[in-house]
Length: 414
Length: 65
Image (cartoon, rainbow over all chains, first blue to last red; front, side):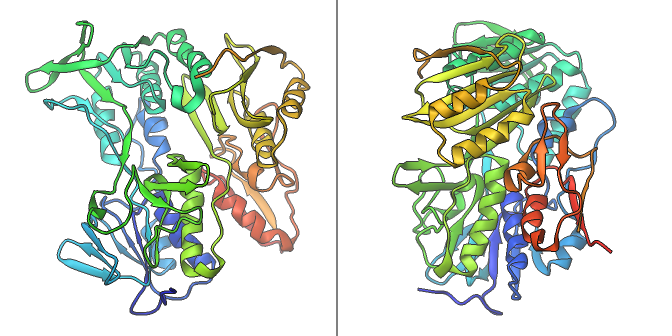
């Protein structure tokens, strides 16, 4: 059933971060002449999140917000903007988004509400931060400016970047990671170990295989108490334990919610005229499902969802090879594809870098992770996209001057 | 049209290379090389995709006089 997107039934995009912005830009680029509404929970114009855990935390004057576009640019796109208005419900029968006591009818809807940082359970103290939004980043900056003994809970990419920013300011930092090796889901066990080594090399105290039992303090946090009884004095605690998709507002809507809005490969959410993109979207395919939290996937999916929403008969699937990057301690980590848990091959200098980890799935190259090799990573993305064989990928990798094989590891499985 | 790179904004993330490898390549030195700074007009759609794909907004396109 095709829903006509028209004057009284605009294209509505809920979520005014990267995926939502790309959706409205793509709609105009596709020549859509009709009304477009963009709704965002945060009061800010769409802004870029990656800098918030990197340059934004550096010592010095408070940086400008990393905005994508000015109000003028959005006006030039003729987008009806509702910022600081969290969506509270969705009526798929009436085809309306509920914003409190207001209802927005849609001809087509793109859900791009992203994800929310997870908090530690239990008592909440001042001096404990998560990092997702501009407001979070400003508060964290102020804490770092004050000087602090920093404890980071979670050695994921956000945790590592925050630890790096704190060390760059000369602050003492301890990172607590519950798993024996950080980043195992993202990069696998062997590569996780290589990434973990960066902390020690830059003076961060990394504690693995231990979780946080509770926080201690009065109004402000004073310590982080670990499962093994260790008490870590802390003035500033940054919790980087992941993000959950922002789907609370969709409860009761009839959409399938399963750690995200379940969508098919074209990003259609199963209700007429409803699509989803970015961190909120769990893309289901015959092989399984995946919810990506990458900048590139949010951008690509936002644009694709809008194009597909405007021309559903010609809807095309999301097929881009995943890509993300992370900057910490002056190093650039980049990953394409995924880590299936099988054979891996390490090339380069595993101690000080640069190094490459290649991931195998069956006879093909499934993923590649590089440290400080920005000139190589996109070549691997292209190989994955053309289903390059494992042997050809190894040959291509080994043929680079100065990139000697460290040795393969069939034993290094997750 | 001309491809304009703002070096100060470029972090060598390589999305431009991913979209349009005939026009962009991050070299072994880590620097982005714009392989054809003057591009034919029929490549505009592809190059606009590359501009949009850049996570740091380091690329713009101009009309060639």
